[in-house]
Amino acid sequence: MSQIFPYFCNTTSIYSVPEDLEDEADRVFEKYARTQCKNMMYQARPDAIKYYYREIIKSPKSDANYVS
Image 1 (cartoon, one colour):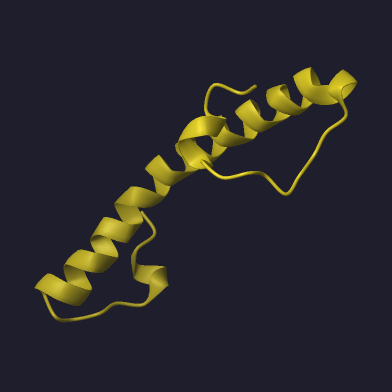
Image 2: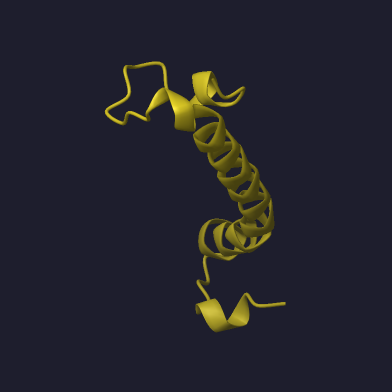
């Protein structure tokens, strides 16, 4: 079973994989989870800037202004 899976899902999964494909499914899931975590880190900066302008400065900007 995946090392990351227990942290994301503590309930019974609705998905099933034949036993002979479990290793491949774990590999694919781990790669996807790693990519998603990296993407979240890159998205954190624009989200923080949006929050700052919307909540602190009280002057929302369009998304075009957030691109660096």
